[in-house]
Image (cartoon, rainbow, N blue to C red; front, top):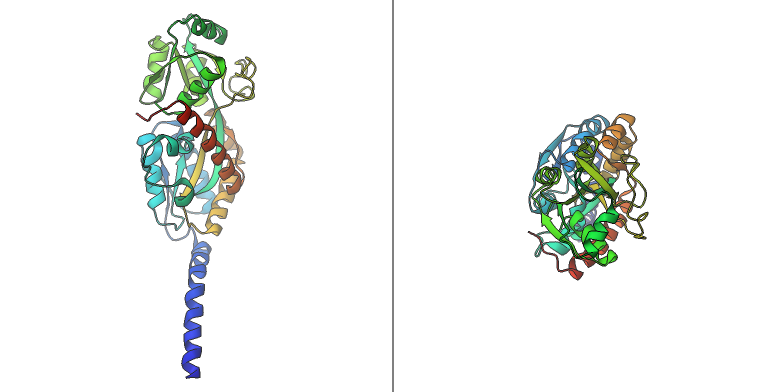
Length: 326
């Protein structure tokens, strides 16, 4: 009887310890088992795709494992994010997300995942201001001209990459702060938006530095203001909205890496360490800078705190202005 009882206690103890032992064993062999899939939650060609592909090769060298970039775009990034949320938490499926990640919970009804219950943050890669721009032959020579037109009740409209995009929300917030309304023209992506902005079909356009700068450099667009609290080093002659009198106004695009919830903490830490090392690499830093990205890095906890703040800020804008997804 004592032998049976002793054996039962041993089995129970092993069963109790197993859930803890399995993740530890997994973390010890990660990532030697198989390639890591890096899910890009937007289609090829955009800034999220570019950021992921800039990180791909140096992360492969740092981790000693193949990184496969897998584009799963659609529904403002929520389709790809949902795929990551449902993946096995073994460290072999992670995602690269954009600023829409913090907006989607308030914008998309019945989102098929919970950001905090189904996902874990690995790292914040970087930020970028958005730029309000107009065609070079536009009547708007400065943002003061835009304000004057809006206050004169002229039909002032602007384009963004879509309803509920950060550009849309930022311009909505700015309009409220400035005390005037303007008409939003949603586009399906940055390419079509830039084509119409350069042609003057839409008077104003808001997009990331990554999207706008090449056309500003080519003198096809005039940058009027940036949405960061400090001037962008990529557009040093362009004032911030804070400088133009809108104290505290800031709305920056950002990129981050996520993984399924329950991914072992050791794996999260190792991936975070690898990303931070890669971001400090001069070649990688230069490539990201050329895309208008200001590198952030930091711990998973810092990434979570930043994303949580973004969720609070933009949830209020969405609800206060009854903004709907397309």
